[in-house]
Amino acid sequence: MHRTRVIGLMSGTSVDGIDAALVEISGRDWDLQVKLLAGETYPYPPQLREKILEIGAGAAVSMAELAAIDDAIAHNFAQAAQNIQVGHPPASLIGSHGQTVYHRPRQNPGELGYSCQLGRGALIAHLTGITTVSNFRIGDIAAHGHGAPLVPRVDAYLLSDLQEDRCIQNIGGIGNVTYLPARGDDWLSQIRGWDTGPGNSLLDLAVKYFTNGTKTYDENGAWSASGTPCQFLVEQWLQQEYFHLPPPKSTGRELFGVHYLNQCLEDAQTYQLNPADFLATITELTAVSIVHSYEAFLPRRPHKVILCGGGSRNIYLKYRLQLLLGKVPVSTTDEFSLSASFKEAIAFAVLAYWRNLCIPGNLPTVTGASQEVLLGEIHGNYG
Picture 1 (tube, rainbow, N blue to C red):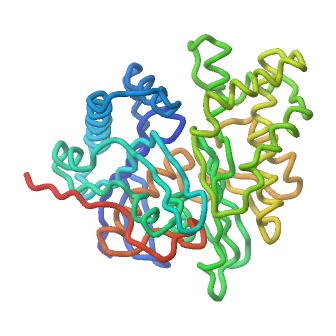
Picture 2 (cartoon, one colour):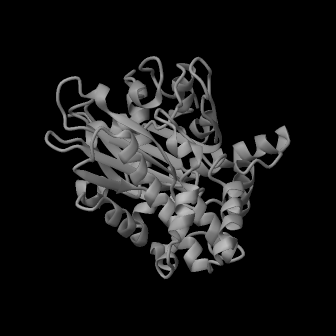
């Protein structure tokens, strides 16, 4: 069977760095097979990371500055693509998600949303000499979808089961879920997915706040685990309108970012929480909002919840989720032969592979788009 080597490149709303996955892909849908050859996270230069976070938080920049940042991100993505191939046969295709700096979902039926990912695909193709697919979200948005989440179709073919209903829960800066009912008739149309709310975004910002920038995340959730969550605050924060909107829906740092954290810090003053208690409470909001969304929007509880993304390594968050879900076991995609750390990068490699074969990549039942569409713009290597 012919296998295509593809590089998936991804940097999420946490802006931790560029996740690069070199994979071999064969098949189309039910016969889709993916083998991870190499996976690595390449940190951004600190100054560029801060700039990206500032733009994501709404800072004003000139077009000249934006162009320079766009180029810098593309150079870093291209370097990641070149580095991940060292010691391996070269790839023939790159799927680059780029760096989201702005996401405005559609508000009403008939309206169009908007999403901006920096890191020009044409420049990546030129620098690497490899055909590059980028700008995956705009096709779905043009079809009146949210442009997110885009991974559910990949999840469907790699992680579904004949007997079990499964939730594939990604916890990046923002959390998103794919609900995969047990495979049966008209199965694709029954798959659902949406952004559940904050993943690591608020927790990372809070750690940065309490350490004056010396730390950027709570490793293994150890600091949060030393505190006690304030359930009154969690219930108050859960009244936020987004949590109660029915899918399809998507969100980002525009909502769950610095301004939201500042409001949370202000709310917490009433309860005189120490830093550990506040971090435990923010972590609890992530866990509770995930479980709340299952109970509010799924036809039934899943048989399994399978985690991926950076938050899947947060031992305390995983513990809180398991406690809230009771008898529903919580595991990670690692246990299903799909790297939890690089699953999103792998997914964009698959989406690029599908785009190259003219196979639609979105699921309209998830994004709200009017139809299935090809995802991504192809930038050829003409050099």
